[in-house]
Image (cartoon, rainbow, N blue to C red; front, side, top):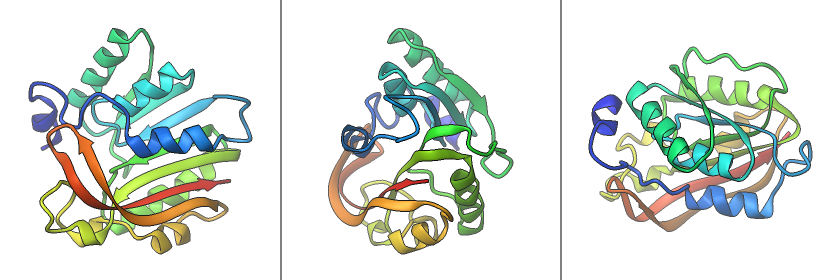
Length: 200
């Protein structure tokens, strides 16, 4: 599915970074890095968030299941004069070294709950002390709105569940809310979302 979607003309979710990621990093900074550092983008698709982070000076690794999406990410990075590292991988097999990132980003990375819990436990370990985890996901209330996101409520995320899945991290900012999402042609409209900034 994802290779087919990313093979379409243009960028499925736009070429600009996610609004919440941009807003979160304007307010919050990892205490483990003076300005920037090592960043990991999960389920990064066509690279819009990774490329924006690289433009801010981060050393970015972008992982995704789709080779087609990551090839577009590399082209986007080159067109904007930055470099990112890409890795085609399934989140189910992703191994992360302890304390290896100052920033980990998860934007619309919807996977089944058992895998999500495994990934989030790994994320908590992979953050350096003072590092940040920034996440935006669709909330269960978004199902049926026709504005994008998974139509299976089990793939959506609640704030309380996320906080329980991130051992050793403290919530800096967390909310379930409605907001207008305008990202490419697949995420458009008033959406129910969950947003989280957590720190190790």
